[in-house]
Image (cartoon, rainbow, N blue to C red; front, top):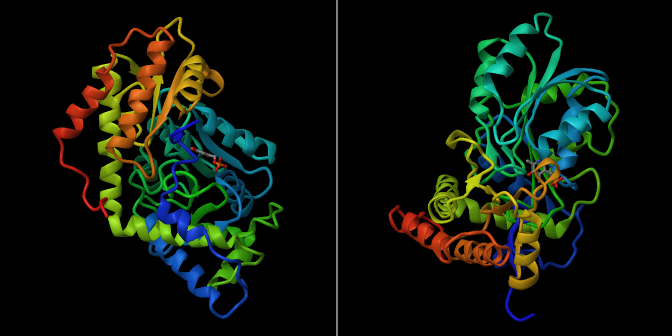
Length: 396
Ligand SMILES: *Cc1c(COP(=O)(O)O)cnc(C)c1O
């Protein structure tokens, strides 16, 4: 088919040409005297993305899921108790992983469309008099429902209750897009991956561990080998890896970090909020539809999950968008399958790219019998963006 494919799933995201070019490199000796320059540069720049002074970034050859497992097996002892909330497919999968690895999970069940229930985290931690909860798990951005949670508030709960549990945060679809502050919020392990806000192909697990988490890893008895933090930290200190790293991915990461820092991290965060605002204007004011996220406090700036009206199959809208208009929208997962479609608006994105996604979603919805007015979403987004300050730093 002529023309390009429009990729608007919330990961993998579009890889900028600059990164694609940076990745087209010949292989080199990863044990050469020159190699540490690349590693150390990536790790130093990652500290700025995680907003940490004392934390240690680690890059695993995995996806984000590998870093979930690394956090659990490096910091906990077999059978340890953890506290987690379930409100979407990703929070579900992380809890499922905890259980399959033999940890005991105290699950806070939450309606899909809401986020981390701060007061219930507080009650659970207060009730834990003998301090048997060893880790608190929070997903900053539940990609399945387009719900963002207040990680800072959970960090404050741990501080207020003087609970010694470690704080593990899934920032896979929020790092480098939605504000994240490792040190200020008291996060012990932040988990992310390469194919979302970092604008790279999938293939790197990007994580950051606090001094407290590294100390826990020294004595934790859960079996792990390939994902052992200690081997990584020792090798990384001199700029090397304990096994062969993906060289193109590291060059891509270096370029991605360079681009983010050139734009300015605060500008990147503003751009995501601004672009998401336009998408939400299209959904609410243009199409008169609703989000899966139930209230503004939960709205995600990286992905919008649009509820389709009763009687319409969300999967049919997605199939139509893909087959007829070359547009990839995100599917409804598990419990929300068929009930919604998702528009990813993270990573390398601007107004006109999103106009294409909104226009394509309109066409597909009209074809599937959704009663919206043609052009209404695009017009509402235009009104939103034209009335707000343009993001700074994003133009070459
Ligand atoms: C994508 C995603 C994951 C899974 O990451 P992979 O890189 O696919 O392993 C986990 N959590 C959230 C919130 C995600 O968006």
